Length: 262
Image 1 (spheres, rainbow, N blue to C red):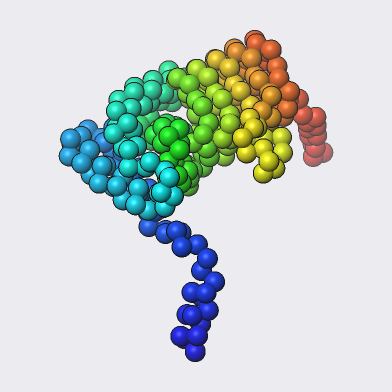
Image 2: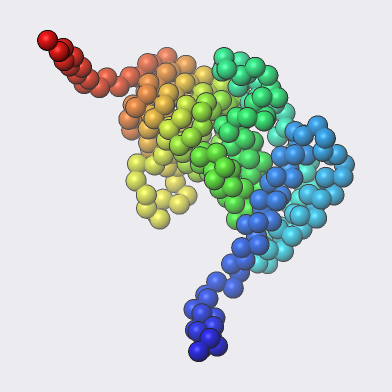
C-alpha cells in the first residue's frame, strides 16, 4: 500500500525544478549579505568567498533556463555592493533624523524592521534588474516574513527612504518612490485592479520627492502621481494624482456620547 501511495504522489509531482533548497539557500545568502555589509565582527574578505560559493549554488538551483546567463551575474553584482551600502547608510541616516525615538544608527541597523526591509529590497533589486530568476523575490519575501513589510524587488526607490513601524506596508512591483520619502505602518502603494495582461504595464503609483504618507493610507494606480512635498494623512484612499505641496486628509464621522450616572 505504501508503495502505491508513493507512486501516486510521484505521478502528481509536476514541477521538476521546484526545489525548496533554493528558498533556504536564498535566505542563507540574504543573511550573509546583511552581516557582511553591517556586522562589525564579520570579516568582509572571508565572507566574499562564502557569498560567491552560495551564489553558485543559487545559479545551479534557480537557472534551469539555459538561456539565462546567470553565471555572469555575480561579478557585476559584487561591484555594486559598495553603492548599495552607500544608499543604505543614507536610509539609516534618514531614520535617525526623522524618528525622535532613534538614538543612533546602530539602533536602526539592529532594531528597526523598516530598515531591514529596505536593506533586503535594495540588495534584491539589483538582482531583479539583471533578470536573475526567483532569488530577488525569495529575498524580499524572506524580509516580508520577518518584518511584515512587502516590497516587490521591482519597485524603484530613491535615496533616504524612511519606513516607521513597518508592519503591513505593501509596495508593488511598478511603484516609483523618489528621494526623501517617509511612509508609516499600513500604507499600500498598489494597483487599481489585478489582471494578467497588465504584466508589463505600470500598475502602481509614483511618489515624488519629500512626500510623507501616514498610517493606513492607500494609494492605487499606475497613473497616480503624488506631487512633491505633499502630506497624505492616515486612512486616506487615493486613486487620482495630486499636485505638489498638497495636504490630503480623511475626516471620519466620529460621535462621542458621554453617559453620566445620576
